Length: 119
Image (cartoon, rainbow, N blue to C red; front, side, top):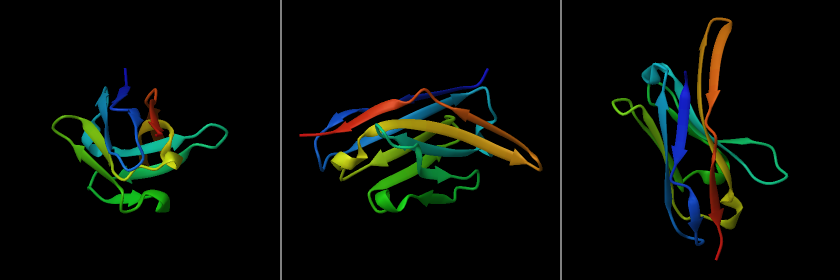
């Protein structure tokens, strides 16, 4: 059974920081591309950042220079360090694991963790 369990969300003031964690089980973590997505009320889910099995990263333009994604394959965990948070970063943040092999693909989601940026 695959599980992705997020933690670290909460309420933070503008300019503050949070670190999200996602612990994975039931998958061969090191071969998956891991990502963080977010969904704000009334908006579509969007990719925030992802990191490949080889360690290559990509970021949404809106978070470049503020957020950092990393992974610890020994702990089967992916992190999202969020600095200089803005009210527009408020959303439910979801962990994602995906892999493709030829025409086959597998994708899993966590349950989400709320991040609220407000004074």
